[in-house]
Image (cartoon, rainbow, N blue to C red; front, side, top):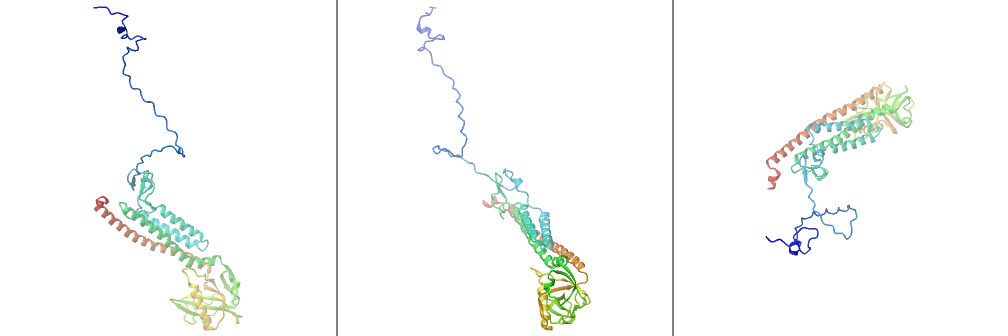
Length: 378
């Protein structure tokens, strides 16, 4: 075999020396190099460049999550279960009691106290009513302030509305019960307790001299003129008899003893402790419910017309009692009893309303089971 010439250029370009022939080098396939990482995005600024083109981004629709299911953000935590039967009955009764007691014992002292309690009770109603029945992925209520009476959550909405209705009714009726008990009983209690006590009062004295009186005890020279009493009949018989002093003369009559169903049309006055007693407690002014003082004034005017008597501009009417302090205690317990009676009647009303409401809820739930919303839409 012939020896290859080392100086042959056609042979030397095949060797892999450092200085290979540039024109004799065969091209080699280069491996692909990895692409450099993309430059970091600039921080988002509130003011974008005016000339920069902002590419629109696709946003996924926010899923709607129904109450009690789905993957909403804490949807189940923010939507508690509907109120139970015990809450439907006990919470309204508690609200009624708080409202009635506040109006009964504090309305006469400071009206802002029962009004503030009423506002707190109304706020408590909404806080405990599990409002709303649909939430988005962020747990936000998207169905308004109150649940809609329809759809798959209609049965639950019925119970929520039932609690709101009964609780608001408790606040309203509790206030009415308390105001009635205040005007009928506690107003007389406060007149006796906080009014001044006067002794040895002369019946011939003008009423303005005892405008702040709560308890009055008359001198021996003053007595009830039972033969001049009049019974004014308006469902009940409102009796009024003048108190006259031995030195009355032609002075206007300022003090009158009154009572219910304790006299004849003319004379025979037998009210309270009787004509032999010498003291009584002042009748409180009329209110929204109690109108007794106005009816007694009609009896006073009738007696003045029959007996030709002059009446003071602002006469003082008195319940003729032996022990004013005992009378005050009786009025206090009567007011408390009125609240208890009102609570018992309201509890019966709540049971009736809740029973009717739950029956409608069960009927609606049965219709939903027989005809689900998905099948109904199909």
